[in-house]
Amino acid sequence: MGRLLPADHEFAGPVPPDVGPSESWRLGSLQVAQAVDEDVIGAVQRMAESVLAECVAEAARHDQEFSEEVARRVADFTLLGGKRMRPHLLWWAMRACGAVETQAALRLGVGLELIQTCALIQDDVMDRSHMRRGRPAVHVALAEQRGLEADSEAGAAFGASAAILSGDLALVWADDTVTETFLPSARRRQVRALWRAMRGEMIAGQYLDLRGQTGSGTSAARALRTACLKSALYAVERPVALGAALAGADEWTNHALCSASRYAGVAFQLRDDLLGVFGDPTVTGKPSGEDIREGKPTYLLAVARACADTAGDHGALAVLDRAVGNPDLDEDGLGEVRAVLESTGARVLVEDRAQRLGERAARRLAQAVDIDAHPGDRLLGLLHTVAGTGAGSSPGSCGAPREPYSGAASPHTANTAEEGRAQ
Image 1: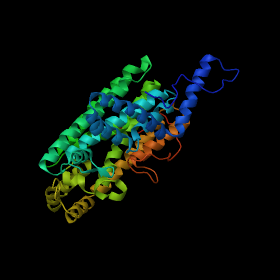
Image 2: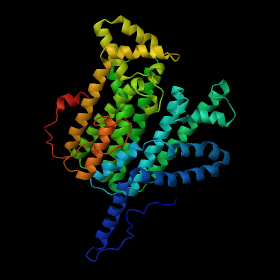
Image 3: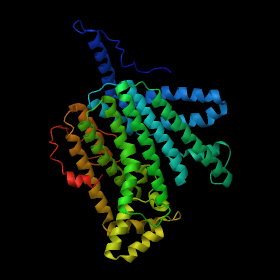
Image 4: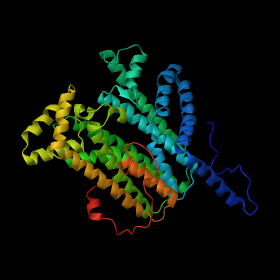
């Protein structure tokens, strides 16, 4: 595999006279890491191109048509879209903990992107979504590639089956990328334990999401559990934990980072649920109301039902019963659902909870007193944008830090009783 960045032990620049061999190794590692600091997304992209070129070449050794029709599509899907939020979180968590495991961090970042590819491809099959990232979903493209109508019985069957295999391939590539990544022996077991947990949590969260669509509704607590598994852990906490593990963070620092990222991750999902109903499709990149039509068991809907039930608002409950899970729901029907979400107070309640969770994330991160200030600022900025707190932030975006990270809060300043209920 061609390397686009020097290995961590390489240092091509001149060594100052007063720097010995061990110090020069460290200096070289730091210079490489600082170069990545300037463009994390670009570095992940270059590493992904290198890793996936080898994956596609290996697929060609199995079968040329398989490589061209499936492997290349999986690689292109991974390379041509996404905000690289997960590898971004991993990188700045590692750097905040003072480590410079550049190659390992970038390769793990590619692994995270590949497991996300698996999740998105198969999620679109389960949700019967025709578009992803402004292009035909993979199951649609695979059917059309074979000259089949995606909505025909034959086309839908072939496209779904081929897409499931494509998702499996992405997951295999993700595992191979992690397995083949050199990790210091002291870190290997922890990183692989986190990776195994993340895979299982992703699948469990997706199953709970799917299962919730078969009933008439779900409780707010169950909806939060699904959000925690599907978004908070998989999308935010585990990438941060992987970065901390690469750095060998101590137990207290690791706990603070994981707790902060979990709060931000739940806030991310709550705001994403709101955007799914109230967001502008030209900004969010997905049709408005799809969660309603698919009957997604979101926390927003659970809160609306609970509020309507408590108030004895049978009209609101009738609207939700009629609309949620109706694939033919039109814009007028969606407008009725929006009105119910407003009138029951569900929208405000969910917005307020997401805001509080984002604030708790910042407080918990401030308890990680041993992390470095500048990378800590970057990590805090990412958690703000993930949580949707701070000016100009939105779920799924990766922007600049919103406020300085102080790293000076006492472990006793957090409202631990209130925060514990959000776990």
